[in-house]
Image (cartoon, rainbow, N blue to C red):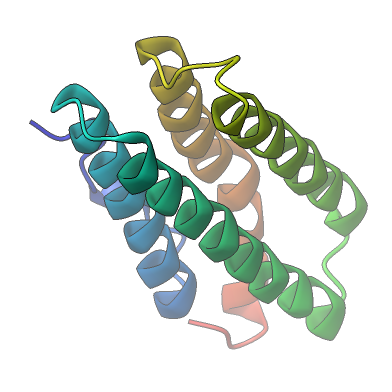
Length: 135
């Protein structure tokens, strides 16, 4: 069973961003499934690294649109991105040092953060980008 299921309530009405959000959801679900199945540290580490890399790619794309279209809440949005990257990087470092196992709490954090970020912070730019012709 998936930890997060895509639904239209998660759509920001920008095709490229929605596709990236779906990929992030798939990666979190993959990590959750591997953790539940007791996969080894190497497999989990690869998934965590992939999630971090793809998240950075996604955030960069959003931020390029912020700059290109002059999104007025860009500063606050970017701060949320920085905080998330730091938190996930801390998880990764702890995991690699065997100080922090991947747990239900970690997975719930990832799931909750992504859903809340999309439904809250990202939804705020939806109409703005659509008015600029980005769909």
